[in-house]
Image (tube, rainbow, N blue to C red; front, top):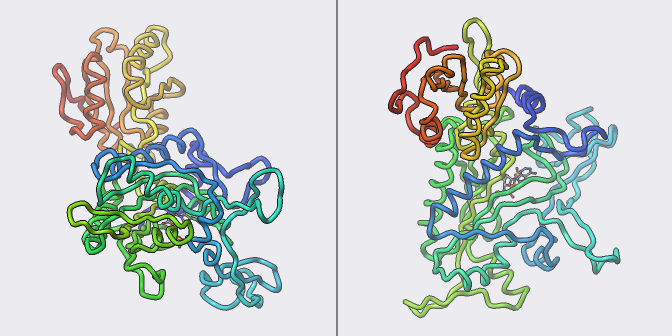
Length: 451
Ligand code: ATP
């Protein structure tokens, strides 16, 4: 399990400006969260890492950005209007509400009181489109991004000049009126998803299903999640939707136990068939080589941005004692770290400031940086460690003479001293994965690594 409990992460997130309760000054909004300056960077980085792996690094996947509000028929065709419901029970004594399928016993977990019979509660948020608030104007906030992909399948197929297999990827907000939210950002009512529908010829679906199970599992590992905290759990028969041929969850060992980060499903041709039936539009494809017409099958990896952010925070959290003091460090992968490099003049001395500002201006723009000259250098190092900044660049009095600066590595605490002229290129190489102790011409390893 991650070595840290949820309270520690919640408190770090609030204290350092990663995540705040939504509308906090009004007492909050149930199950909604706001990402502060560092959280906004981290979340963007998670989405960018996903987009890079899924779209930019592949020839067979393209992107989409569909609207949140859709024609309400979409949700009839997809089955959400009839079936996107959880069983709701009320406690007859304390009036608390619960999801019946999340309870271990048939009594209120808060007060032990008797529960009502379960009734099905639809999780879609309803609103009205246009000025008249009647039944005909009801629309839904999308509870998943996937349907925007299915209804655009023909548009994308015919404009992208691609053949099957073809993936369409999308990142965006989804909304679910969850009965119980909780575990910080793990289950909220407004959240973001990273979903991809990979359309394939029937018969090749088992191969592609395996392919995506591996790809998606490895994505988390490459970005630093420890393998022992991740698992692929196959769905039991009774968990599977009636049309699904197979489904696995990528689960992370959260402090509350193994829980879903992402679902990967072989959905057969169900979605395209349903939309074909309800829209009256033919959504099959014609394969030139074989002269065959068929409705593609689809493999769907569907991940949660917020759950990934939480897993990356928990898994990277590390405490150690350095020189008799506790050091808290987020060992975030450089691609995810909100701030890549901090520039720290040794002090606010008037001779140092112009050089430190010049050093900062030479590297900013290449990646996210922060200039920090308040408090002691030791405190500033600790602050950067706690938010996961991979490298700190220190400008000291010797820098005025030798035009060199010191770089400190967050994880090993090694320090190297290199010419300012080589700083930008060196940092870029190290952020891209170069060994920290590899030195540019004129550089040297500083002794006494730990500080
Ligand atoms: P759960 O069983 O936890 O309710 P689900 O199986 O309904 O999740 P999916 O419909 O498969 O979830 O959604 C795909 C992904 O979207 C999930 O793996 C998760 O990462 C994310 N997700 C779903 N619901 C929420 C939520 N309420 N808050 C945050 N993320 C969510």
